[in-house]
Length: 132
Ligand SMILES: O=c1ccn([C@H]2C[C@H](O)[C@@H](CO)O2)c(=O)[nH]1
Ligand SMILES: [Zn+2]
Image (tube, rainbow, N blue to C red; front, side):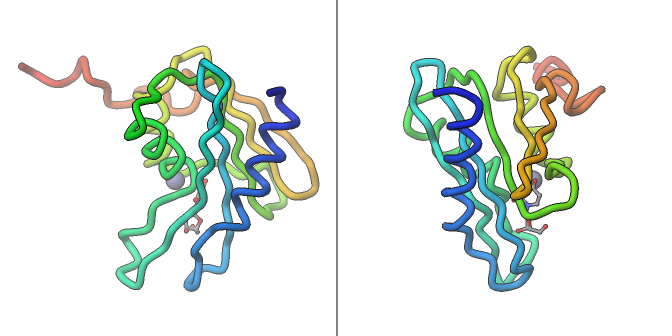
């Protein structure tokens, strides 16, 4: 699966968003190391803060199915610039994905910004910061 195909999957996933409050659909497609794709969309809730973003939906789906090795993620929304992931997603992606993994941010116009996981959240809180 190449970058264009992964972004196309993210666009399809976006259609599954549950966004009665924001009406802002986001899609994500997460490629595993063995070539599987997990889709995600944002799922909102009447208790607004319980919303789960598209990126975390895809990651949590993959993880809970036992797929924990990833090679790319694409994210798409109808934004002017390629959609930037929120801080919570940057934190979660930083922990669950390898530092050199590419993140393809895009929009419906087809603008693409490629960024590496290690550059998503400089200074992220990490497992090494926990005392045991
Ligand atoms: O990268 C992003 C940015 C926002 N959202 C969602 C959260 C909420 O449902 C809506 C508006 O913030 O978009 C995502 O899913 N991913
Ligand atoms: Zn997010």
